[in-house]
Length: 244
Length: 95
Image 1: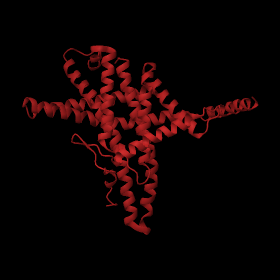
Image 2 (image 1 turned 180 degrees about the vertical axis):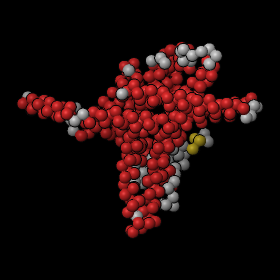
Image 3 (image 1 turned 60 degrees about the vertical axis):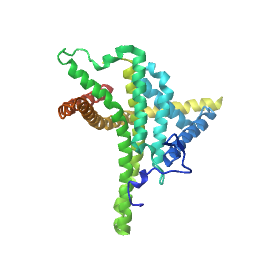
């Protein structure tokens, strides 16, 4: 059981079974780790911003770093019009980051390695961005699908291609995060299994691989959270500042 | 206030040091490039998958199997390549 590399992705119930209107709403290990990352974010940011010192301590430095990082990202990619959406993008980035990073701890569960979690977030962003686009521009938002300067004969073809490209956004957003997290964690487990099966004599090579992979996975965990947030900004930019 | 002046001096020295090591400022660009590289692969595949799924659904609506799935597979591939070209353009603008 412990050598099965997919065992780590299993969702199981913690505590009693709760069923409301036929839907299973029991508390699972996935819910536990979502809750842990949400509480972790609150703790870091609460204690980081509690005392506003001129010379910041480590926790304050980290929270200011996160704030500046996201604020700069929104300013660079979506412009000043996207300022009202800062709280959403900041929470999104922090949540994905903390879920990914908590998943790097041994014996923990990686929430973002389940496609349903990432797909829900991506669909929420997709629908929200579409609604924002229609609210800001009315039916002019449909111009996004009709690029200017295209011959009339080609227009139906281009429009269909643009619509497919637009609809592929949530798929690519969710699959990217899910696939990267799942592949990385499976690889870590497989190499860990090699260490055990090769024993003291041959186990050193996969062990060194495992150490290197852990470093890579921490990089990927950060990078995927960053990519998720920056793509949200780019999509928001398309909706707010309509031009092609 | 002596403490504050001392801090200002140290900050100035540290900022000058940071200017000399221009490598540190490059770090940010680097990570955004790696993010774009991750984006390229999935964008290409996702559009093909979405195109094929749309073709499949339309096929079962209009009973035109297998023509629409073939057409939409190719349209999806075109959309995927378009996605990649757009990302590549965005990467070049940042330079």
